Amino acid sequence: QKEVEQDPGPLSVPEGAIVSLNCTYSNSAFQYFMWYRQYSRKGPELLMYTYSSGNKEDGRFTAQVDKSSKYISLFIRDSQPSDSATYLCAMRVQGAQKLVFGQGTRLTINP
Amino acid sequence: EAGVAQSPRYKIIEKRQSVAFWCNPISGHATLYWYQQILGQGPKLLIQFQNNGVVDDSQLPKDRFSAERLKGVDSTLKIQPAKLEDSAVYLCASSSGLSSYEQYFGPGTRLTVT
Image 1 (cartoon, each protein chain N blue to C red):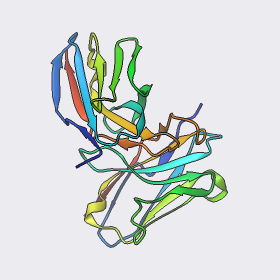
Image 2: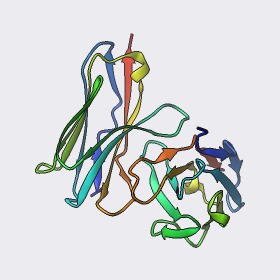
Image 3: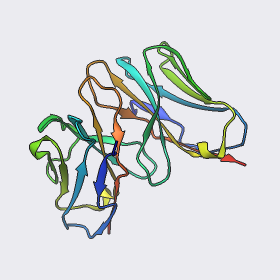
Image 4: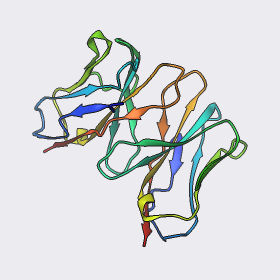
């Protein structure tokens, strides 16, 4: 079993839709949760960062962490064609820098 | 602020050949990472440096992969000899220190082994 599981998609939605991306994990020691966005032939860029449980909002993006269920989510509101990319969840334990990534979900927003 | 630079961007080699990748991190960043991203998968950490010392190389296949970070700035990752399964994108990332949560990634080197 992988430490972090993420549905690879692909996911295709119309412009303006609400998008929900999810990851599950097995290591209860994970404390830091991140979402990275990766455009084709580019490196990943940090989108959202959350420590422990709770919600965090940044513009059209909301990250949620439910540690009791070992489940994290990223919501994108009013999705735009420019949001088309692969979204990677990543996690790490307290005191370590090593990131454990999910497989990535390929998202396409259709105009 | 200049980002993480990597070269070459693309490389095609035959199996059993050797190859080297170069990374120049963001100026002042003490921590440097090399990741391997196989097509359709998330990045996997190969090695982490803090200045010029190795912090974590537990997932580096040491029989064929080596990396160094002389003078605590630039880094090179070498594969010798390459196998077909080494075909992947090799990403370099840097962060300002062990306490920093944000890693900045370079564009990667896409390696194809034939």
